[in-house]
Amino acid sequence: MARTDPMGVGLKVLNRIAQSTVIDRLGLRDAAEKAVYHGAKNGFRAAGAAQRRFAKVGGPGQGARPSTHATGVFDLNPTEDQQMMVEVIEEFAREVLRPGAESAEAANDTPKEVLSQTAEFGLSLINIPEELGGLSPDRSAVTGVLVAEALAGGDMGQAVACLAPSAVATAISLWGTEGQQQTYLPAFGGDDVPAAALAVAEPRMLFDPLALQTRATRANGGYVLTGLKSGVVRGGEAELLVVAADVDGRGPSMVLVEPAAEGVSIADDPGMGLRAAGLSRLKLEHVQITEDAILGTPDDYREMIRLSRLAWAGLALGTAKTTLEYVKEYVPTREAFGEPIAHRQAVAFTVADMAIELEGMRLTTLRAASRVDQGLDARREIALARKLTAEYGMKIGTDGVQMLGGHGFVKEHPVERWYRDLRAIGVMEGAVLV
Image (tube, rainbow, N blue to C red):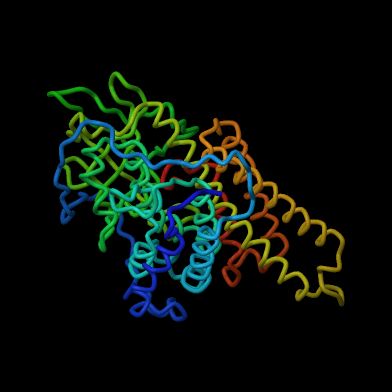
């Protein structure tokens, strides 16, 4: 699906894992017992009290851009690199994320050991150019979708937390100036990847990412940023934010904000699902930013929204697939009126519909990602992927709960959590990016 350098991104990821000391500290097979969680705190509080500071580097010119390799072919067979990477991440999701999902949700947080290990996988480096410390000269939206799908197969909430820094690194890699890239990207290639978040959504009805109430108003040779954001991943720990704002003279744009700046405050904002992502509200009160904090153009902002929606579609695929697999194993074992419920035609047809809907979601999403990789206009395909994954993902979640009957409603089985997570696909904006 995408060309890679001779060594191969998949091999590089495996090499990083092999050299990782986190594996020894965490223990893949025993992750649930070794997780350390932190409880939620209520109320807005100052952000960035003990944050790292990024030393600004000059360079207003366009930075390096990850390239794409257009083959002109829509091929559903992953490359060897992609297959290697997906297999590693699927094992990680199965052995680490899924066993710890219940505890992570209860704590409204993802274990720091888990986040450290995904950082050592190089998730935040996939779309960073090699010259800036990344893994490959080529960018691949298909790879991003496959990675999101594999992680969400373990737990969508933790997957979002793990992918959040990658969203910021990808945005800077795709649209940053030379100075922005040299200032921020090296940190994502180091041993201590910064907690970072792509903040787009606002807490209001019928939110439109192209009609933002968060505004950056010209003042004193720069801008004053004011607004309120919701759905900010790990906001209380964030060290770098890419914030969507209506910028004077430009319209909807991306703005780089360091939470240590005066006027930035955070409040916990747990929702119906995705609790392990540590969702927060971000309040911006007259935050002073400079001209070089503006990231990309208004057209780049629109592209970011589309690529974010494509990433959410990938997450929906992973959770929907896990729901289907769980139901397929459950219905032959559950008996009613002296026989397994799988023998009932209505049950069999419902499970078959879930499989058909999942296949349609996956084909549409991969086709959209393939067009992105080929440099083709993918607006229509991404819109279709968003529509199908939001609608059918929610339906698969609902059917999953229904197939378990009373068991689907209680926390003894994970389908109720998957149902709640799948509800997020149609309403979340930003946070993740491919």
